[in-house]
Image (cartoon, rainbow, N blue to C red; front, side):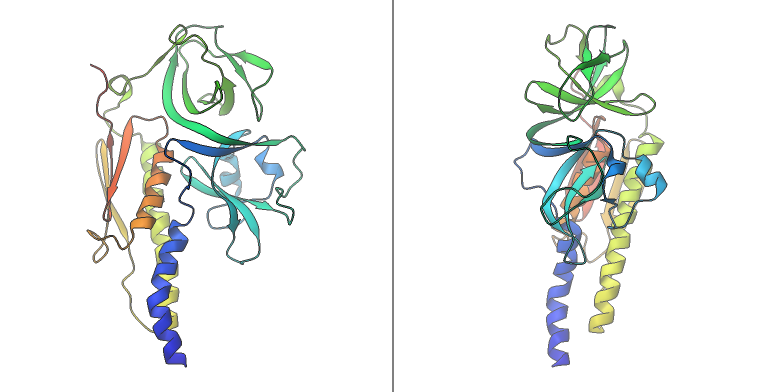
Length: 302
C-alpha cells in the first residue's frame, strides 16, 4: 500500500507544486481586470505572499487606497479552510482574509473599500504640462475634488474605470488618486519610450526583479524538498538563474526545465508579476520555455 502511495505521489506531486506556484493566473480578458481599492490596508487582515502576517516594512508598502488587482476572489489558503482574496500590487502577491459571509476581515470602515470590475489596464506614464488644470480626487471611488496635479509632475495611469483614470503619484508619501483627462492633450502629454528610457534599469527596479526570481526559487525548494522526502526520490529542484546587462535582465531555468514547457504555468505567473513591477516603465517582459527577458520597449517616437 505504501509503495502504491509513493508511486501516486511521484506522478501527482510535481504537478501539484507547479499548480500551487502558478495558481491565480487571471481569468479576465486581456487588457481588463478587477481591482479592490482599500482606504486603510492596515485595518484589514492582510497576509503576505507566504500567507503570513506581513512585517512592518512590508506593511509600509501598502499605501492608502492602493489598487490591488484581483487574481482570485475565492482563494482557499494552505490550511484548506481560510478564505481570502488573492491580489497583486507592484509585483507582489497579497491575501486579504474573508469571513464566513465573504466579507473582508478587519476593522475598516463600512465604505472603506470598493470592488471595481472590468477596469481597463493602462499602465502608461503621463507628464503634466500645466499647473492648476487637472483635478485629482482621493477615495475608493471618484468623488469630491482634493486638489490639482502639479506642473512637471510624472504620474502613472494604472487603470481606467468609466471615464476616470486611477493614477499613481510619485510624491512623498506615495499617493493614489482619481483624475479625469477630459481635454486630451491640453494639459498633459504621454511620455515616449525615447524620452524616458535610461541607460540602465534603475537599481530599485532591478532589485525587485531579482527578488521575484529568488522568491520563486524558495518556493520550488520547499515544494520539491517535501516531495523528495515523501517519495524517497531525488527530483532535481528548478532554479531561476539570471544575468544583468545594462538595459536587459535575462532569467533562465536550469536543466531539465529550460527549453521545455514543464513549468509553463509557473513561468506565466512570474511573468505577470514582473509586468506589474515594471508598471508604467519603458520595458517589456518576454517569456518562453523557461526563459524570461526584460528589455526596453521598441521606440514609439523619434
